[in-house]
Structure formats: structure tokens, C-alpha cells
Length: 100
Image (tube, rainbow, N blue to C red; front, side, top):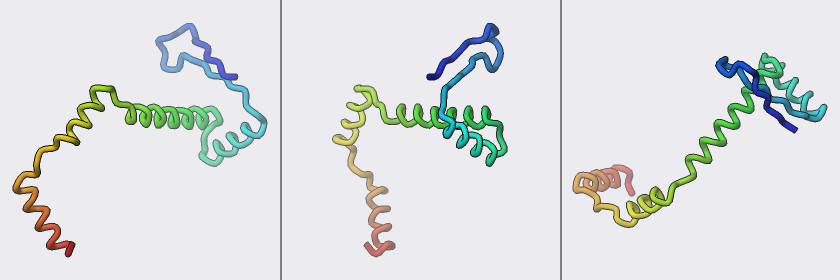
């Protein structure tokens, strides 16, 4: 079970404490991985958790569109402007060179 304890000085860089109960096997694995990377157990666990949390939040935010965003995206797909003459000419030139 994890818990976070705030320290009295909320102005300092590291003000919160995180504790978790883990199995002996998990601790051994984390210690081994930390040693392989030349880090302390704390540094390894914090860096790994931070990396995973950052990636999770970024992926979630990238996949969530507001209703307005979704409607604008679909409208742009359904009502796309016709290709300009320069774009059509470039596409023909590409097809000739690619042999398509």
C-alpha cells in the first residue's frame, strides 16, 4: 500500500515522501536493476516511476479530444479543400519518377 507524507517545508524541491510495500522478489529485482545502471535504489525507482508516469500522461492527453476538437477534425476530413494546381503537378512528377 502506498502513501504520501508532506513535510512541513513545502518550499523545498523535495517535499513529499512516498512509501510502498513490495515483495522481496520485487525489491531484489529493483536492487539488481539499480546496480546495473549505477544508481541507488531510490534514484532508480523514482526515475523509472517518473518516466512511466510522464509517458502515460502524455499518451493519454494525446488521445483525448474535446467534442469541439473531434467535430473540427471530422469536418476538416469531410470538407477538405481540393488540391492546388502545384500540389497536383508535384504528385504527377513524383509518380513519373517513382514509376507508379
